[in-house]
Image (tube, rainbow, N blue to C red):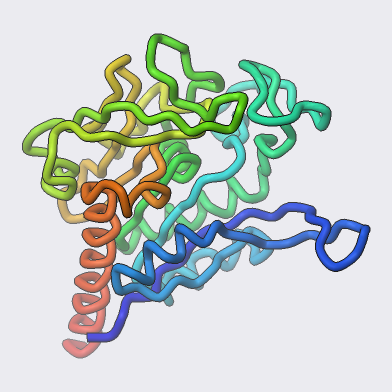
Length: 268
């Protein structure tokens, strides 16, 4: 069986590289690509420069899509006005409603990734969403977000000194997430100040932090592998087996999708 081709979404940012002037780069943190490669997939980088009109054509050539973390999802995508000020002068993670430019939404990226998700859903292609990617899946399904997560005893975001705290993740029994993770309680880490407020129509919430924040969603369609997580399994999958199990399950689902697709082609 050939290795599945996994599309990974990406960021665009201005970076000083070989000269004193900044250039725009497309980039993905290597821990995402390592998690795919080490579990038997081949990562292919996708970016919004491609354009929404080509999203379906791209998806048809893939076996799965990983929606990664990054900046905030634009509130226009869930019919809200932006309540946050994004400032170049803010160093570090900022404070509620005052965030650094690295968190500023990219509307073009949002629209492109929503187009990718809708195309994948139509084909029932396996989808994994992490942090921003999990939030984007919820928005694509008609849900909404907390523009700032209420602080109620659990630290969901990176600290001012750039320390990433961990907290317990509670998984519903008899859910797809429970089947994947093999546990109902384990540690996770999240570094984002936003999260799900209202669940999208096509999703079920199956994992929560102790403060009640939704941290895992899955598809209502039992035949479609869709898992979204608020935390960052790619950062701690080498420390906690539950998180690597998520990537392994995603790659296995992508292999099955590939096998099923080619079986249907041969049948024709």
